[in-house]
Image (cartoon, one colour):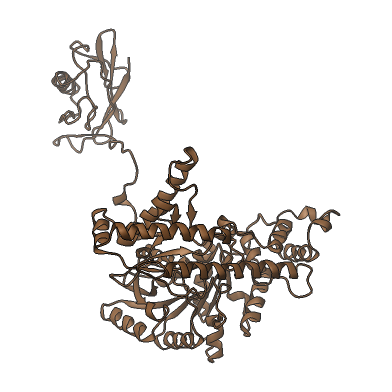
Length: 606
């Protein structure tokens, strides 16, 4: 039979100076209690007809009963016995089973004149957290490119694997995210050769390596390994990144811009996203701190601002003017935010644009730099698509190059530029490499940025190596140069053709308009939806463009992201699609999309 303890104290101690105990034991048809070691007494009655319950919160069989035991005078052992016995008998008639177990309880006595309530451990909960008890900023944070529609797509993909032919398509085409290699893009050979040699340096001394790897990839691997303490790519590095790799990146920036770059300004990160989060942590103090963001915008920015408790101050890109940025709108938004008590801290500019694909004109960039300098704003320049420019009349210029060419120096404007190995022609998303170049900040602020970087110890070494390779690829005369150039140009020219094909196809659809894709990896067409379609979306409790995107997915297997996830002018509807499916699959994408769209428009025609 089980033996349970019922603890009690008087002022924390009993006569012997210890907390007392009442042991209740069921044996041989009798219930016995022991107040202190060596002292026994009998609770009269048949234990088969009653059970002592010593749990204030209730056994499952007695939940809801007031079954705690109050002891007015802990010194009176007999009184305690009577109370326990009486309460046990009272409980008996409510029990389904006479064999219910006894429960351990703690009793405390504040004084001899006050009642002592039985106090025990709180009831066990199924989970330590609920949605209501977590950080509310997490609930506000949303990231559309991996939201509900992607979850549906994953479920459909599993259904296709388990039961082929269960849907009107045989594969899912993920056009929701800029993930080139997942859609068939091949990595740059030189980059991968160097990475392989760095991760397995013992093969550098083998004779057969000379026949398997290019001579310049072997030489570059040796150079990089010599910069890594212990030549260990599995070890932590300096929190800003390996010094020699930052030297290489700074030299690449200087060559690109025509202005010097300082390696101490470089912070290597796991892709550009952690760098963005780091700057939001630095800038946002209260919910009254605002960050100017373009609308439409990449949802990383709205998510990060929400996560760190700030306020997004929107400025709308002009769709009719090719998604142009108007300085007059920036000024109006800043004035409006300040009138509401918001302190605007920074301006985010994405160039080339995501999701809109525009490339800013140099004159427009100069206006932006002047605006930030005049307003005292930090300029956060998202430049991860700097290699993705597809039109001959546009060219990428970094904001650092623009500001320096205007005569602004370190003390004139605070500027952060983000770069990533995930985009461009390299598309190494899974390697998680990137950096931010931080200029125009005082030494004490730089120290705080370094502290934030240190909290994460360091970024991964493979990503650091890739970032240095991206900014210092093979040059004329290197063995790998011709093959590297062919791979690079092949990828970029194919992306340009795919962008043009999809742009033309979208513009041929009823009620769809799509601006020219000047750069990046996306198109952001506008859809004119009927009132019938909008009402159907309302009935489905979803945004109209999300309703369209879900319908497209279920009918064709094509995954796109609703424009509502990026922000848009109220009353307009869009979706974002990548241009990344391989060129031989683009005709099938166009065919599926065209057929679906016509049926959708016919079904929901007013």
